[in-house]
Length: 177
Image (cartoon, rainbow, N blue to C red; front, top):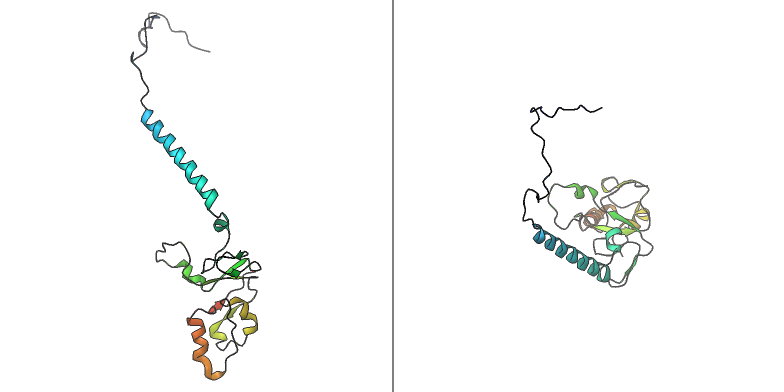
């Protein structure tokens, strides 16, 4: 229920009367945001041009598909690079601890070697526990493309260490299934 205010009450001021000639607080009004509207329309046109170029010349698979250290897409036949990875949809990082380093990485990619593999490893392996690659049968599919590790003899420890330092094989493998 509303409170009825008497006409002679000056607490809230005097009531206004209707004026048929009143044209608002400013009689000469105009639009003031024309420049902002033109800038916004130019932005939308530019956005449409970029979207068109992205869809006609770009490859949207590169946004969602893992990419190895050589720029090949995992799980696809990379004709331009000459490497068929259609049976290898997963990405293996040789040293995942280097991805969490505090140093700035401007290309937004982990600085360790990455290869596409057909399945994720289901075992743990550390070079320090097997420095002569006695488990090379399990290791071969997690090494660099075209490289097959061999079982080294006791006198070939330096050669086996060179495989790790040259990043032909990872220094450790984590179970990731």
